[in-house]
Image (cartoon, rainbow, N blue to C red; front, side):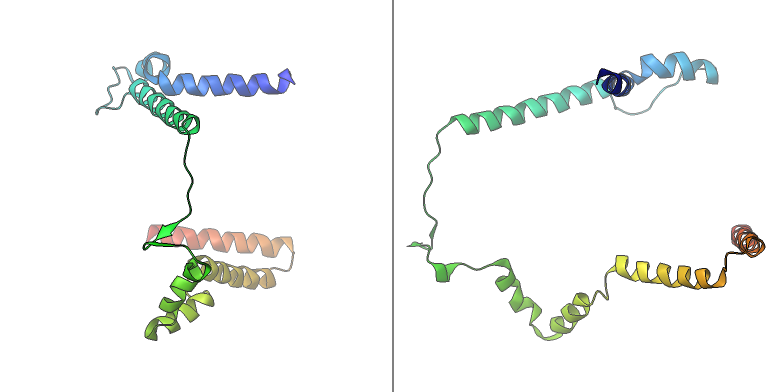
Length: 163
């Protein structure tokens, strides 16, 4: 209902207003007096101009889309190399790249890639799971042991930050 939409709409309107008019609405009246001097931003950024350009771009895109839908379009069969397309002429992406995956040294690299040897996400996940599994086995659920692990971790972080 309205009681759910109104707060979200008000926050959205406040975000848009602060994004477009940050300097007159927030920077001058709130930040300027706090720092005791006029706040000056170097550079050419102007959110009003940027918003106007975004709106112009969206309107241009919508007009191109509308013109494309209103004008009649002609459809024809694919005409490749002076001949009509035949089923034996089609080449899928898999077939095209299969020749690359079967080339000499690349065959081994693609085989290792298929086993996810180069996937940083999988390698990182496996390493994190191995470390967390070891830590889980080391922690038996006893509160003093848990506090000891927290203290050891805190000391290790302090040591590495202060070296």
